[in-house]
Image (cartoon, rainbow, N blue to C red; front, side, top):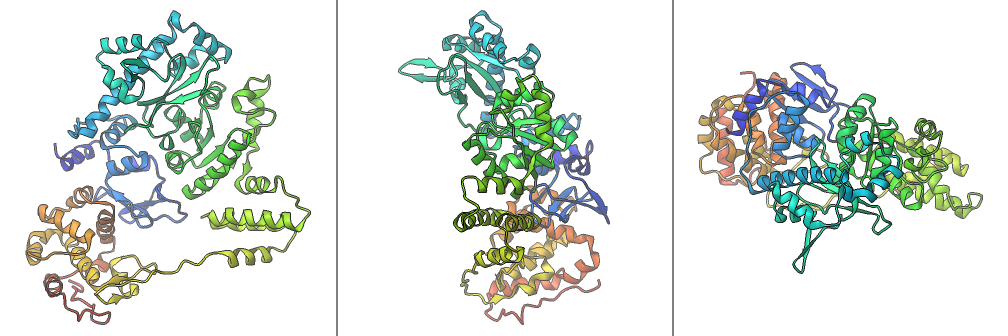
Length: 578
């Protein structure tokens, strides 16, 4: 089944508004729907969905595509995974989609291996050989229900027994080696997880993609994680996300802790909107994962110096993703797991969540530590550090608030701090542009919806985009218009890519646009999406699309490469009013 046939089949069961509306709050605007883009930080909606064309486009970040492209992008997954997500989240039975690529086959084999190994570890935890691990589990206060809920397991000392068990269930040792569960050295098999409590790590839809192992006998390292594979990258993964996401979506808030045990302890205590960052600093990819279901993030890292550094980094990343971030401070304990062991630990942790401090307060408090704020030198160092933090912030309101708070901390007028900030900002100079074609000023590109933020394009590039723009707005005459471009080679890579696909697709159907987008790279897809959605303003389109004669004349000018193309001579024959 071809992709466009497959997407049409899905469209009979679930619409693009149902899918995107699950992640983005939408409102109707004419024939389309708009909302805040989930792929970049914005306050004014630029994300547009066209139900007629079964496609979306963001006028801010240029993201575009159909419903499966959206799911792939919001979850950062492959096509088969996106199909699985749609099937699970929207409770629809979809036709099978099989990708025959080597990468897809490898992924399926890895998933099958890891799923089986998780079953083997869970069974091993209940066996007599796991006595020491069972005792460790009891000492950490983990109930049978918690162990089962998180599918905890045990990796036996005897690696050969694990290999044999997996072999009997259809998984050979080579497959185990590709996942990092088993390694070989001088003819002997061993596991880096031997004699450890095992934590399955899931992707966003519940597939086991890796493992974490916790030492139970004091050996080092305390924690060992699976190596990175085509399935697993720590910076793109949050522990317990599929278990936490329903609660995150319901509350709109996610709590982020550092380790497996912190997340498990909080879930067991009823804080089920908790995920863990796998011991790494909070990353932008993790922030993007949370943004699809959370608007607020509470960061709760260890109170030691490393934890504080991780929190500072996390704040700047969360700012770039547009999440509302606050910092949780746990008093009298190193981490949540330790606090929850106290008699009133649950109540104390709830208070800590309720009293989470703002981003600005956290930055200000940490910048003050170790400085003599009564001295000029101490205040100067404080201001310099805070200026770096302020300059990293994209949110203008947050910047203004921080600058006001800086002024209060150093007891100077707000105007003086603002002046210092603006004076210190670096100016970005435009690079020189050299091209054999004369430059065409960006203000003449407005009718095409091309980038105008100070960028300049050559006259030839503009003409090429004029031609392709005309094709997109005249798909019903596509075969006829394409004949005018026979033998013409375009230099603009995006235009060349679009033209190449159009030459293969000459049906002239409106439904061609979503199919076309799926075959294009990001830049070309964004151009087609924007031009296609211009149809919402039919009068605008009629004024600016090329006529048959316009396509022919522009194609001829491109063939001759006339040096007469100038800013004043860049006008092209257009249809006006039919």
